[in-house]
Length: 415
Image 1 (tube, rainbow, N blue to C red):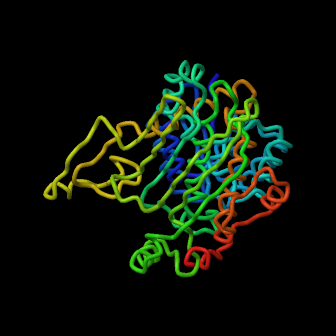
Image 2 (cartoon, rainbow, N blue to C red):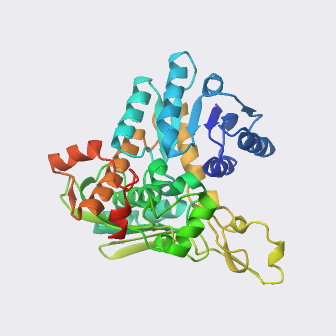
């Protein structure tokens, strides 16, 4: 049975997911809604050219919801609650929607996250939280390759994960009050989630390991310098002299195996100031007597474009997402959506909705990632480890809004 999928949003991430859907069976994109009609029509044209369905651009979410089995929400963070409220209202009025997808992060803070989970559960909707790195073939292949080793020697005890590039595409991503923070909110959620997953023993659910504590730092390095700050203001209209966000973060999440008591750790590092070929995802892990390493900038394809030929290059990102150069020696990834796990997470969601269940990662899982991200911000603010077994720290996280998210990060990031 084909899943009739509707998409809310027509920006960069929606484009990327549609490219991924060309590699997924038994799904058609039957409708799109966006506040920017031109973008919606452009995306709809691509859907039709790709053979993904005779998609229709609808005027509102109610019209879309009346024609689809599932809806993917690919909208800016600051309107996500509003959009989900509209979807749930349509379902309450008879729309046939059975499942709903949320792109990472689930929410900007715990208050918003709990509101989203409550909305969909009361409406009886099945959910899928999209964290593509957990579906990366490289990550899951190493788990399969090391399965017998893990059973004999024991699970991994330390993992490092990083995501780095030169900065986001859209103005709202740079605005901490709309996005929810800086690179920790934007990309730290990836690295924290994939670290948790990579440490999880084979055959166990994604939340098997229990988080014990979080320690983190945030800093404004490149984009706080006057010259770069001015470039940011001119290009995106965001003034980091007034409302800055962090462009670098690093930290440690400590977990415990509830069955054996073993303590394991995941280190994360994320930045918006990576000045090499483009987006880099890096992961490595060590166990007793074995290890793995993943680097997405290692490609079987490289090309070279000299100065004289560079004028013929229209789009640097044709080679690699977030690429900052269109000439010289370029790393080219022939199938970026697959490299990063996008087709597999879409296939997982579609299969789950056909079977009337949540995807591998539910919105409750997404809420746990929000909690860990908030704990990292709180650690950076307070200068101490956040104890996730302490009732007082857990209570504080429920209503916590980071200073950076409030637009008050100047003192924190310049001290």
